[in-house]
Length: 168
Image 1 (tube, rainbow, N blue to C red):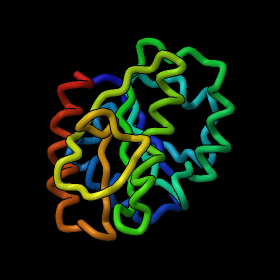
Image 2: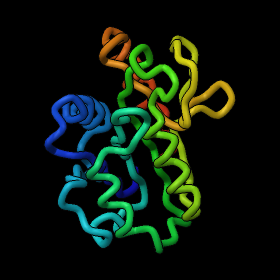
Image 3: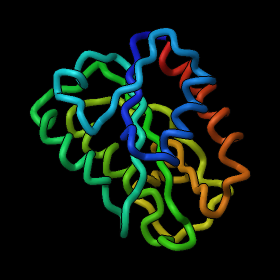
Image 4: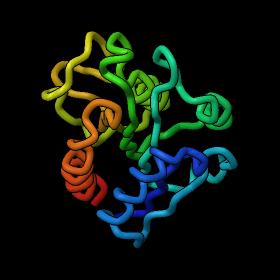
């Protein structure tokens, strides 16, 4: 697996637990955890493959730390770089914008010619709308630990197996 950075907020407890599972399944060779709260654009650009943890906040918003970070790379070309995105959402409490953060991030990356990998099925979820949905798939891994915590490990394991192939 080529040089991979997994970007997330080290202050996020739930996301941190998910990252630990992903790292355990991937192994730590060529995978570096990076705290998006303190990362620079230069830190970001040195990877070939990316795993981005993007939980959805409020009514379909990116977390503040991503909003503050993205301007540092908005003028960069991401051509030749591959991005896998995952994040948590609440499909019952925020049914109209379930995991919108994943979709917002995918749009930002694609506008800069980044390639999105790690699509997952929408089957087994119940929601009204999502910016992360394209047809019958999400543009990443959607996790709902509020309503479907029992399914998270299985979903993470299947997703990581896909990433091992996509990032080879």
